[in-house]
Length: 109
Figure (tube, rainbow, N blue to C red):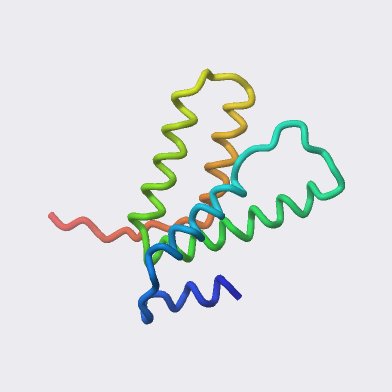
Protein backbone atom coordinates (compact mmCIF):
# COMPACT_ATOMS: atom_id res chain seq x y z
CA UNK A 1 0.00 0.00 0.00
CA UNK A 2 2.82 2.40 0.88
CA UNK A 3 4.36 1.94 -2.55
CA UNK A 4 1.09 2.84 -4.27
CA UNK A 5 0.66 5.90 -2.06
CA UNK A 6 4.22 7.06 -2.74
CA UNK A 7 3.62 6.81 -6.49
CA UNK A 8 1.10 9.65 -6.03
CA UNK A 9 3.51 11.88 -4.09
CA UNK A 10 4.16 14.08 -7.14
CA UNK A 11 0.47 14.93 -7.38
CA UNK A 12 -0.17 15.57 -3.69
CA UNK A 13 2.17 17.50 -1.40
CA UNK A 14 3.57 15.59 1.57
CA UNK A 15 5.21 16.88 4.73
CA UNK A 16 8.99 16.50 4.37
CA UNK A 17 9.26 15.19 7.93
CA UNK A 18 7.15 12.17 7.00
CA UNK A 19 9.28 11.53 3.93
CA UNK A 20 12.45 11.62 6.05
CA UNK A 21 10.86 9.22 8.55
CA UNK A 22 10.12 6.73 5.76
CA UNK A 23 13.66 7.11 4.37
CA UNK A 24 15.23 6.58 7.81
CA UNK A 25 13.05 3.54 8.46
CA UNK A 26 13.98 2.01 5.11
CA UNK A 27 17.71 2.56 5.60
CA UNK A 28 17.46 1.01 9.06
CA UNK A 29 16.33 -2.22 7.39
CA UNK A 30 19.32 -2.13 5.01
CA UNK A 31 21.82 -2.47 7.87
CA UNK A 32 23.74 -5.75 7.91
CA UNK A 33 23.08 -7.95 10.94
CA UNK A 34 26.11 -10.17 11.48
CA UNK A 35 25.52 -13.66 12.76
CA UNK A 36 21.72 -13.51 12.69
CA UNK A 37 20.48 -16.85 11.40
CA UNK A 38 17.19 -17.09 13.25
CA UNK A 39 13.89 -18.41 11.93
CA UNK A 40 12.95 -14.95 10.62
CA UNK A 41 16.00 -14.46 8.40
CA UNK A 42 13.95 -15.02 5.23
CA UNK A 43 11.32 -12.55 6.37
CA UNK A 44 14.03 -10.02 7.22
CA UNK A 45 15.31 -10.18 3.63
CA UNK A 46 11.78 -9.86 2.21
CA UNK A 47 11.13 -6.77 4.34
CA UNK A 48 14.45 -5.24 3.23
CA UNK A 49 13.51 -5.87 -0.42
CA UNK A 50 10.12 -4.22 0.09
CA UNK A 51 11.80 -1.19 1.65
CA UNK A 52 14.22 -1.13 -1.30
CA UNK A 53 11.20 -0.89 -3.59
CA UNK A 54 9.81 1.92 -1.42
CA UNK A 55 13.11 3.80 -1.78
CA UNK A 56 13.01 3.27 -5.55
CA UNK A 57 9.54 4.80 -5.80
CA UNK A 58 10.32 7.57 -3.33
CA UNK A 59 13.49 8.53 -5.21
CA UNK A 60 11.43 9.41 -8.27
CA UNK A 61 9.85 12.32 -6.40
CA UNK A 62 12.35 13.05 -3.60
CA UNK A 63 15.68 12.26 -5.25
CA UNK A 64 17.79 14.77 -3.25
CA UNK A 65 16.60 13.40 0.11
CA UNK A 66 17.28 9.77 -0.85
CA UNK A 67 20.67 10.65 -2.35
CA UNK A 68 21.67 12.62 0.74
CA UNK A 69 20.77 9.74 3.09
CA UNK A 70 22.53 7.14 0.92
CA UNK A 71 25.69 9.22 0.65
CA UNK A 72 25.71 9.90 4.41
CA UNK A 73 25.34 6.18 5.22
CA UNK A 74 28.01 5.21 2.68
CA UNK A 75 30.43 7.87 3.94
CA UNK A 76 29.93 6.67 7.52
CA UNK A 77 30.69 3.07 6.56
CA UNK A 78 33.73 4.01 4.47
CA UNK A 79 35.31 5.91 7.37
CA UNK A 80 35.23 2.87 9.65
CA UNK A 81 37.97 0.25 9.75
CA UNK A 82 37.64 -2.07 6.76
CA UNK A 83 36.87 -5.64 7.75
CA UNK A 84 34.50 -8.35 6.45
CA UNK A 85 31.63 -6.91 8.52
CA UNK A 86 32.07 -3.44 6.95
CA UNK A 87 32.25 -4.95 3.46
CA UNK A 88 28.97 -6.81 4.09
CA UNK A 89 27.42 -3.62 5.49
CA UNK A 90 28.32 -1.70 2.33
CA UNK A 91 26.95 -4.52 0.16
CA UNK A 92 23.69 -4.50 2.15
CA UNK A 93 23.41 -0.73 1.72
CA UNK A 94 23.97 -0.96 -2.03
CA UNK A 95 21.48 -3.85 -2.32
CA UNK A 96 18.93 -1.57 -0.70
CA UNK A 97 19.26 0.70 -3.70
CA UNK A 98 18.48 -1.98 -6.29
CA UNK A 99 15.17 -0.37 -7.32
CA UNK A 100 16.74 3.09 -7.54
CA UNK A 101 16.28 4.50 -11.05
CA UNK A 102 18.17 7.32 -12.67
CA UNK A 103 16.63 9.12 -15.61
CA UNK A 104 19.04 9.57 -18.46
CA UNK A 105 18.53 12.05 -21.23
CA UNK A 106 20.29 11.93 -24.59
CA UNK A 107 23.37 14.10 -24.78
CA UNK A 108 23.17 16.66 -27.55
CA UNK A 109 26.26 17.99 -29.31
